Length: 327
Image (cartoon, rainbow, N blue to C red; front, side):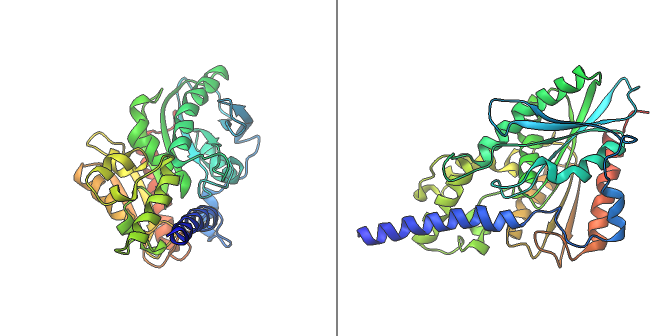
């Protein structure tokens, strides 16, 4: 019996560590090695002509609680839109600096843009998707205050991200928008997991009808939630309420913000089956959304260039529609 328990604990450890440090960690959406020519217009190097960057502004007591704020060169506007872009990295890696080109592009479109760091999970600190989402919630008011201090009045915002950052963006947009210091007008993200049903996580072997699989799912999702999940609750009616704090799709209602999302049908990092819950929730609640399903791509969305271009064009269209930059 003791041998079996040790083996179970060892398996939980392996699944959690490998999932966070390897699987999600390698799926950084912005790290496609060869970018198509059309992508250049969405990847801008910051210059004085575009604006100015204020780096490592603190928003909390944690070492990682810092953000970069990109300010457009034209300072003559009474009101400004803010776009928050959250970095990828499997909740254990990554940095706001990884998205400098995306943030510069948003700044070039006339938006204030903010890249926010959050405390990455390690084996020692016990951080989770939930704790990271609370840090983002804490950071946004400080971003708005800093903009005001610099002479920019923010009256609307959008939130975005890729992979882990996509999950955090959805949680802010669907769960926390009601507490935002300024109205959230839209959300765009790619390949962020929005649901945590073990039946959808087959790429990690969690969908098997075995006690071992249920225990493994409980262990993995406990790490993401930041509190222990009893394996006996994993497939019960009570599980939804337990996992809701990090399940973005569960927070979608008829008042949820317009959304543009993209996922790869071959994705085994953010298991593709998880997408159905998100799309169904958006559709059933009448949310204005566009969903781009990339049939040949995995987590990097690297094999469907035409669809990826359509996704980015839709992002720009929704930004122009729901939070046009002030003239």
